[in-house]
Length: 308
Image (cartoon, rainbow, N blue to C red; front, top):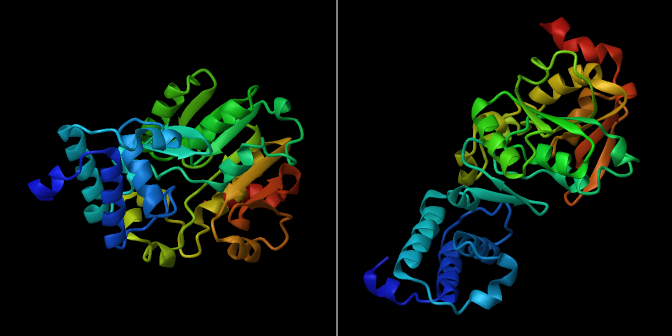
């Protein structure tokens, strides 16, 4: 940006307008929280300035310092030229009203399970106070573990992930929410290091992007760890492991909740006899399934160990 052009940006409103224009000039992808160029620009500008997005009108005509303008322009240009998602530029993401610290060691929090958690998984969990033990498998940033601990006040939560880097990010979020006494972080390849632990509730937002879909994702997704996205040829590589062992780690009345993206058809082809309940979310009724401990067949619980 030229010095003359930069001098023409004086207020928050000016920079917001500039950001919207720049975003509309390039084929950037809005899939990590915001819906369009204006929402993306507003979120970037307001949060970079540590201002409340919901009160944007109050600040639009505020004059910015040269340093603030330079900083905002740098962020805007990185979003446009490098296609870095705004959440990584800011180091924060929001999910169902919860703020999470993130970086490129974890995928940006976005889970349809979070929509169900805000209602304490009603009606499938009739009494949230009775939930005493929760496992968040493939925890990533720890977003679902934090939400679960906050919403199910009587529960202890294990947050497990194969990635040490992801667990470092999760640890920061657990600390920021003051939940260190109730959320335990566990390095584990699915259930591998969890021993004989059993839970009332198991949540899992695993890697489920098919190989074909992964190769076609917008550039923005290339900034996220492939380990947290790639689900194999049909997207079910990790889901199979979860269903194979979940029965051995659920209490008798326990509930398993798994997100599979657009993989409903693949799941139903693979498990035609498994009585799955598909929850309705903002994206329809094919993203998240629930299954009771008693409905997980005994052979499924030992399938992975037998294969090994």
